[in-house]
Length: 298
Picture 1 (spheres, one colour):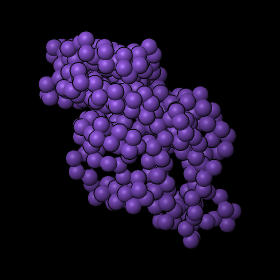
Picture 2 (cartoon, rainbow, N blue to C red; picture 1 turned 90 degrees about the vertical axis):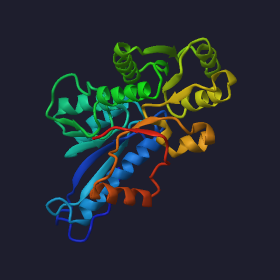
Picture 3 (tube, one colour; picture 1 turned 180 degrees about the vertical axis):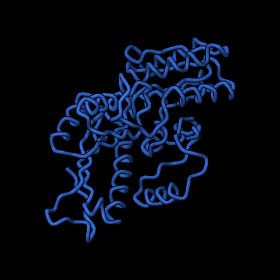
Picture 4 (cartoon, helix red, strand yellow; picture 1 turned 90 degrees about the horizontal axis):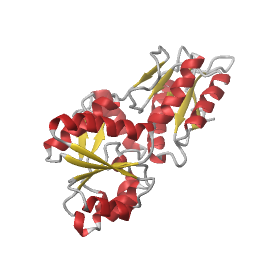
């Protein structure tokens, strides 16, 4: 459990607080850097609420649970947080994990504000208990497909791991590209090594390879291997899920990790509150490096 300090005047005589369950991938195989970013934003928000006097004079307390990119662990965490009496849930980054958390939250009647998950079917049925901030995957990935076409890439290969999220993304790309003359070739990461991927690409006419895989493995080894294969010097590498946004990406790959376009859910210009939050997060070293990006207008 993690409790943020309460400001002067925000304590009630009985010491009670408003408790919010915070879900984030903080250990592998989760995307740990994403989890840290997410938690930093939640902590900033809670700190600002407490600095303003809390909620009706009661301090806001974050009760943090690590989901580790595990749907079952996330569902168990939701049940535990409900037993602890949290007022609501917030957070989670991975779509498949958030879906499991949303399903359990809906069943328990516990409000859940999902930070990042984009799966269209975040829940199987309409619910008044679950909301999210990010646009649905069907919107963002169609934007990415249009970006590929507009930059001259209609023959696409995807290196994909088995996952509802990656499968959904591949289907969206194929459905959007096919009527416009585009093709999508799937490379199954369950059977292919990075070197085998290069051999497959060399035998196709694909001009772009999309990384529908985990971070840093196997995404980083794939990029290294493709960049060093002289047969593939003209191929573009893309990562619609946003792996290149992490500082670790640049640290591990250096120049090999540059020029890889990804989806970033930011407006072209931040509002005044957004700029203030960005400044605060940069101050705690959460801001990520600049990369080639595709902006999805919110």
